[in-house]
Image (spheres, protein in one colour):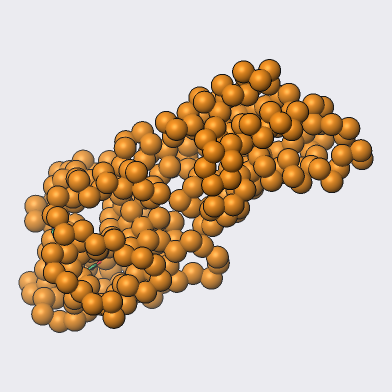
Length: 328
Ligand SMILES: NC(=O)c1ccc[n+]([C@@H]2O[C@H](COP(=O)([O-])OP(=O)(O)OC[C@H]3O[C@@H](n4cnc5c(N)ncnc54)[C@H](OP(=O)(O)O)[C@@H]3O)[C@@H](O)[C@H]2O)c1
């Protein structure tokens, strides 16, 4: 199970917004094959493990009833893009299945295991559920909380400022921090910003990384109209929301295939998220530059981070900056 979980992680940037899943077929203690959910919209892990085992029929085993299937997440029960895995496991003749964690998605939860048990397959489940949940943090969060996981990322000067007003862009953090931000973007399913940041900075906000990934979708909150020449409109479709009701906007993504949203905006929108109690994680890149009294404060309240119950989870140096991660 640990091997299935560990190797599944290789596909976290191409499987998203789906969870990463690994599957291994064993005959007694020998591994016959393995399979992973490698690409969103393509075969699930169990199907790949079954397909990969077929070349060993007659060599390492005679038929699937001799094998045990280990899979990190409960096999799906719904006929989505790829057909139900639970039914395909039954059709293959596999008689023993070990599941890392039950799927939190109500469309599947317990139903995949029921299909297996109803068809005389022995199932053991919940072997490493905490680890599987940790690996697919935002997927589990979304199904438990009926909304995506929200991370807010800010670049702050030493004196807690965001930018100078009336200039096009204020550079605060170092090159290495900007590189790190690309990985943070790659880890999210969508990036959200506000009208002012788009008008003032014209950012592209894609993940500029050197590996394959499903680029984050884009979300823009504005009441004004924007033409599609802004950089933000490159790379991916942009959802535009005119309402200022953040709770409604964020909850509307429960039905969408987005498990995590990275908010990269200025103080107005960030403070609105804070007041709406919609920040699960706050990432601060703090530079040693001071903007002084002309700079715009990040937070409307003094000690906002502590006041809103955020606890520092980790802190590290990136060149001249400090990266801090706060969680509720
Ligand atoms: N240091 C950093 O990390 C960082 C990051 C991003 C941006 N910035 C700086 O921040 C500046 C802009 O900051 P800002 O505070 O003026 O604007 P902002 O937070 O980027 O955007 C505010 C705009 O978002 C829209 N909006 C929709 N719903 C909202 C809601 N519930 N609450 C608040 N806004 C909502 C409105 O757009 P409409 O007016 O279009 O309707 C509003 O004017 C830029 O100049 C940029 O340089 C700094």
